[in-house]
Image (spheres, rainbow, N blue to C red):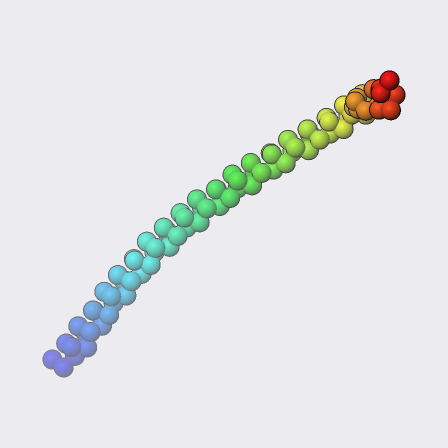
Length: 87
């Protein structure tokens, strides 16, 4: 009967090992889920930033095209020189 304590220690060791593996797999599943959510959030924010950048780029092109077609009316040019307005 001297082998009975060795079998009990081995059985307890295997039970602890199985419990640790199950716990680790649960934590890994949760970690993967969190990583997926973080990646989705970063992808969403990056996409939003790219869309805003594209919008600004289009607005700048439209403004430049509009300025080339019709130059801005500068009030100091249309009134003439200020010395002429004194009378």
